[in-house]
Amino acid sequence: MKKSHQSLSMLILRNKEELLRDKTRIEQIEKRIEDRI
Image 1 (cartoon, rainbow, N blue to C red):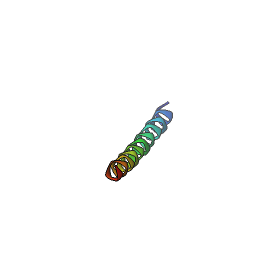
Image 2 (image 1 turned 90 degrees about the vertical axis):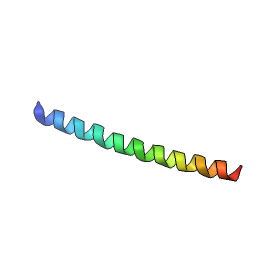
Image 3 (image 1 turned 180 degrees about the horizontal axis):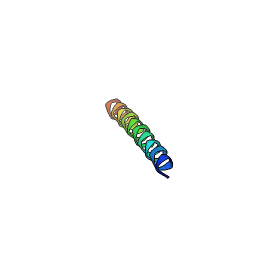
Image 4 (image 1 turned 135 degrees about the vertical axis):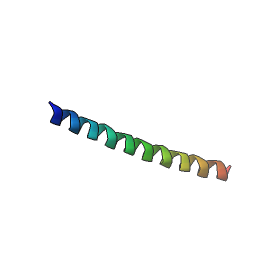
């Protein structure tokens, strides 16, 4: 029980990190697009 809960929180943490990375990438792309306009 505890072990599966631990792996689940690890998965959630990893997903959060990937989401943050994607968010940063999207913001950079939006900045680049705004610079072009």
